[in-house]
Amino acid sequence: MPVAFTTGVFEATNQTLVQCVTRLEPQRCHRLLVVIDAGVRAVWPALVEDITRYVDVHASSLTLAAPPIVIDGGEAAKEGIASAMTIVSAINAAGIDRQSYVLAVGGGAVLDVASFAAAAAVAHRGVRVVRVPTTTLSQGDSGVAVKNGVNFFDKKNFIGTFVPPFCFPGRQGSWPWGSVRGGRSPRA
Image (cartoon, rainbow, N blue to C red):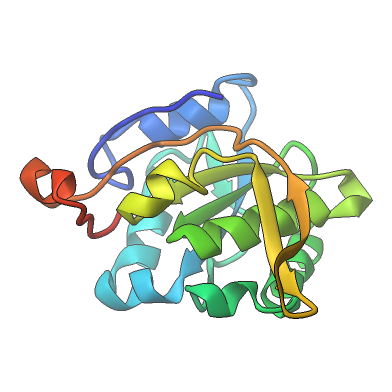
């Protein structure tokens, strides 16, 4: 799994994401289903437009399989399977297959539930996942971890899977490095 550290991951001139996704099949146009943390969307109102613009600029390599979906973040995302089933339903509706990607943008809980849903898409025995962590904790935990789960029966991560991310574009935050070293990180 490649790990890349960059800033401005969705800026048109940034090649990090497109290189991560196309590394095994550079000639293919890769389909993306984007899952966004609602908290990140709230502080980055242009995120959907930035992602859409990025994909449009790299249209020979990337395409959106559906409009990005936004789900609640935090532990609420992992309570039961509702959020995961929203993503699994979107995977089905968009015709995502094993050569496609779920691109998860957000904090640890959203990365966790999106990865779980991608792995749980049993019709295809799993879908590739690219994780874009937006918090310091998610960079070191769910961003690179292989364990993914949801809470069930009042038990933490009771239902889960093991799936490594296909690639991990690392820290993309726009805050000064001193803030990041201090434990704060804003967004991708």
